Amino acid sequence: MEDNAFKRDCRKNIRAVHDAMDVLSGKWKVSIIAVLCYSSQQRFSEILSNVEGISNKMLSKELKELESDKLVKRTVLSTQPVTVSYELTPYGKSLKDVIMHLARWGTEHRQEIIAG
Image (cartoon, rainbow, N blue to C red; front, top):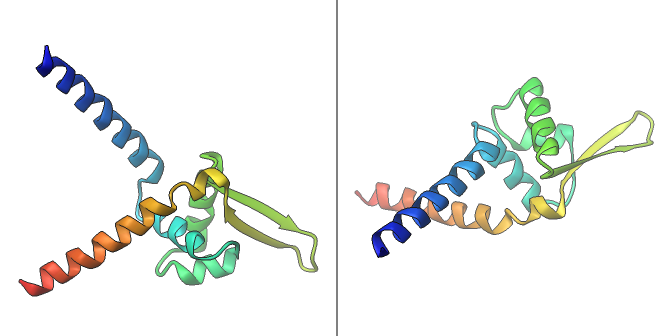
């Protein structure tokens, strides 16, 4: 009995990880979310310069997907010329702890690898 419960919980958790990875998959989404975690709001051009290596087209695509997944809010400001800004939604902000833990782990991992 106990073994079946463990397997069921394991499958459920693995499925949840897969669901999260489906939303965050790709080379750029976590970086975009991280940039928006460190500042409350950014214009498209600011995100473009802060996410090293991403193209205009790819940033536009990724922001649309993040908006569709309710993680990012797009606001069109009535300025001249028109300005578009992006920020994390309250739901998107729930990823902030995940991003901070991932950054901490990445730093520790780099130190581990360098230490040999």
